[in-house]
Length: 212
Image (cartoon, rainbow, N blue to C red; front, top):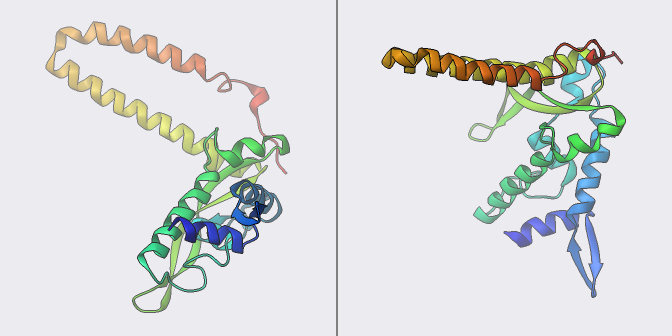
């Protein structure tokens, strides 16, 4: 399986010579992914979203066009496993988290790496027919509305969901041990103040985003 994965990189040109041999080079592949994102997957507005975003399989096929599963279904268990691992690795480099490989490296360009549901047509292997589907797509953007909808918005909703889970847990404790209500309220008050103070941009007018 490791040989299959290495060969997929070599076939796509991500390789280096050493002691007369040819070896796969992930550093070249990472650089190529960054170039592909800044050249082909920048979304400037909502109308460009579906076309500009790239899905997990599309990224795999774009970067490794000769790899297992791109032009034909994997022929062996090893090829199938290699495909899954390569897709996971490439997609991981496009992690939208603040420490993600691509997210960090597009900072100087002013882009934010976001993800959103996008419409696609999926091939059903059992029937050979194509059917509409919705998949996660990732893209770079400077657009104000897209950043608010697909980056800061989801982050805020996750924060709210966590707060609601905490409220439910507190309610459980107080319902079972009413004498702890004052202690719990004091404990939560400290945590809430810490949480609010840690979000320094929440009340900052300077944090308003511009539109491209």
